[in-house]
Amino acid sequence: MNYLDMDLLRFTTAGSVDDGKSTLIGRLLYDSKSIFEDQLEAVEASSKKRGDEYTNLALLTDGLSAEREQGITIDVAYRYFSTPKRKFIIADTPGHIQYTRNMVTGASTANLAIILVDARNGVAEQTKRHSFIANLLGIKHIALCVNKMDLVEYKKEVFEKIVDDYRAFSSKLDVPDIHYIPISALFGDNVVNKSEKMDWYQGATLMHTLENVQISSDHNHVDSRFPVQYVLRPQSLEHPDYRGYAGRIAGGIFKPGDEVMVLPSGLTSKISSIDQAGEQVSEAFAPMSVSINLEDDLDISRGDMLVKPDNQPHVGQDIDLMICWLNPKKLALNGKYGLRHTSREARCVIKEVKYKVDINTLHRNEESLEIGMNDIGRIKIRTTVPLCYDRYSRNRITGSVILVDEFTHETVGAGMIL
Image 1 (cartoon, rainbow, N blue to C red):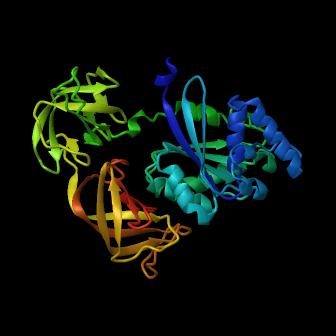
Image 2: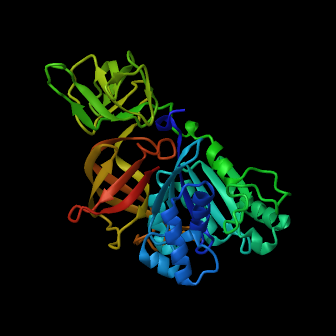
């Protein structure tokens, strides 16, 4: 298999503070031989300096000096590694409640979430909070890793009780695929290699689960969506009349000969050819980046969307969404913000705050409607131009928006369309 054609799995880690997320990632990298000698030496030196009795693998992902000093994760750290079967991008996200926004950032592109539970503490409030956020962000696969099994003498009944508790809670979520794995990140039990101390566990190791989880069906291949990012007009001697629409397919399948409709104008045409990296392809699907050429010369520009006439997204200006607020300055009711949705830029006004989610109990709070940093709530906005969108649960690309402060140009909110 060509290295470039290998499947890519993006996963994120979540769990309470001190559940061992960074140690687990360090262990994955170390046992899968994905770190360099000098990285290991630097970690060994840092461990000695801190007075740790063992090589502290958590230091592999904690890049900020403040993280290493306090022994906590503050910002999202991305790590890249591969095995012969798959390429991986890990987002190591913080467990603290005041870093909810960092977790949302790390999980927004993930296919799978590893949720760590301390075997001594069982399913905690933060376990539920992180599961709720993973569910909100449309993650379809969860690996619930019961860590620190070494501290409960590798007992089967401790693991089984946590699995039962989590099953009862997760029945309320919309996550179709959950794996339960007892591990010790510190000693490497069931992380990359099978544990001899837990012969009662017959399931797969974490690494085997990551290598084999099926993610190809996570892309929406039903609803055809192609947001136009750029119009290609080289006007060269070789291609005097070439006009291609470049972008990344957000859903569905496009083939030459297909009839397509341009939104928001409603004009239709047929696909004459599809190019990828200078070569024609017979079909294109998410998440390929391609250039689509049409039979007719239509007025199409950045921000428009190509769809199939018999399967169209919602088109509208009044939009309901769940928002995660990322900025110290609170959300302003009736405030105006810049908005980015696929390749379209617009402006919007906040019409209503319906409720705020109490992230610890997951209840709706309809009394206090102030949304500040790290809060998640349901709001209604009105946009200056119609957006072509789907529900976030159907399509993570056409169903998400970001809000931008018009003066500072900071991203202030991440929204999932309901």
